[in-house]
Image (cartoon, rainbow, N blue to C red; front, side):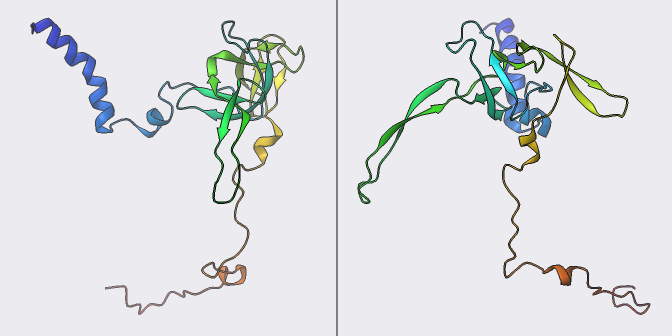
Length: 183
């Protein structure tokens, strides 16, 4: 093998070695492209990629996968999914339509004023809050209400191993000058 070819292969493999050894930071590992996403769950979007089979359809974002740059939009990119049955329980299998993921770059946020797809930029208001602004109309795009609801609700029941609310605020330690911990 020639020296030029080996040098080229070594430079190409440098990135892979770094990835294999796990030297990537958490931020690089979670979002390898380093983008700031302007879309969140609950936003109304429209498919703008002309070659996509669902071009022009719009819906609400159900799920976002930032690692793979994909979004799942309600009612868009529906494909049949086979659900297996259970012979022991006498349940037959069936086919149902489910949404599949589409690339992040294929969708744009829908402008609340014009109702057309638009690009977005971020801006700080006078009170210090960060908002998304439509490039077409200049309107502020509010964050969806669904984000205030937790996707996985907090556990509110107390179990046997949980500390009750009354015991949490009891003072159980009083500092003493002759403590056994001081030397």
